[in-house]
Length: 126
Image (cartoon, rainbow, N blue to C red):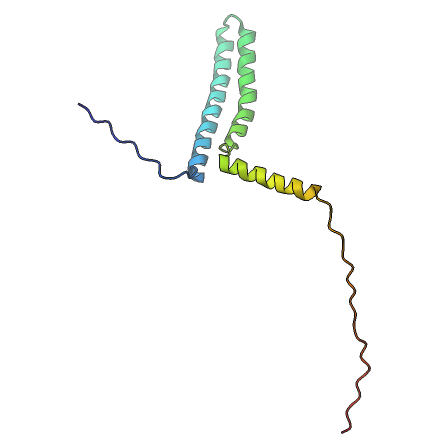
């Protein structure tokens, strides 16, 4: 009987490190740009081979070459989804702002600053 290797136990709810997230985004970006290069090469091969439905294939390759960079940048700059705690903190902050904006402004208090007028001091003659 074969033993299955034990899986590591998750002991924290910590998010992936910034380096891990960056590495994953870089891999997705390079993969999408490689597909773009493949579309360019495929378009060149299709033109030289003169395949049936050539205009359709060229339009698909052109769309891939035009849309993939845009999608790759969006995906590469994306962050992981927010956790329940982050969403709850955002909702509480929005509620605090809403409550502060809907409450009437406090009445200003008139403060009078009074100063005693001091006569010029004369030297003492004792």
